[in-house]
Image 1: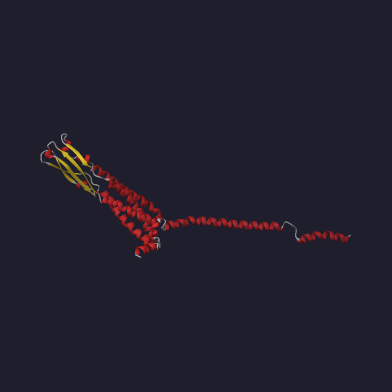
Image 2: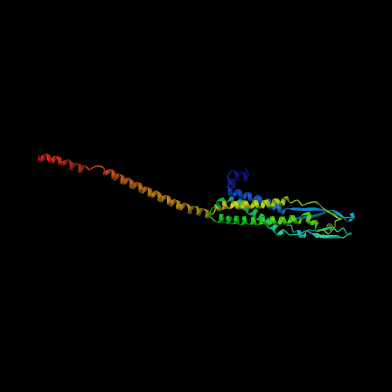
Length: 285
């Protein structure tokens, strides 16, 4: 039997059935999808400029761009429809900061999720030996939840700017030849942004996963245990005082009832004294 089968048969991967480790495994996968769909993107658009003088036309102007979306560095040449002169233009905008921040958060979240999953599976006993491991895990989970929210929001705004800057209609407005009604300018095809839209979705899904996992990590910390003890101590004190009061009441009732039963009838001495009266009267007669 190979080592992986032995570990599985021994129940080593049983930790993945718990919410804490299961959510970490999902975070690992979703982080991969997030930085792969954003960091691996490359796209482009194609334009055509049909001049009055057909020899000056260019019907296939390709403009390519990719991550990290420094669009102001993407240059291309277009005809001016005024002889052989050509115009050199560049796209507008720079969304590199938001894109790189988003990918950086995704990469570090992937690395931490991978390390945490390994600890949960193979070193779970050491993880729970003291409170230091769960506390560090809790703080890191809160920090990454915040980073995912900020990174996803920033990248959503950055992607909106990328879509505007690479819109063929906006790019055509930059060309001097397209400002002349005699020339025909049109878009051959627009850039495909589906993978970038998916990256934003995965970013917010990662935020939901990390924020939801805060509770399960918090349950492993000493804060949760001390809170449970704080809530249980007053309940135990209240229950013990109630039982103590009930016991005294029962014993009091029992003793009182016994005394009442003992005083119901006269004692044998009293009965003897009462019966001695008629006998002495007979003797006197």
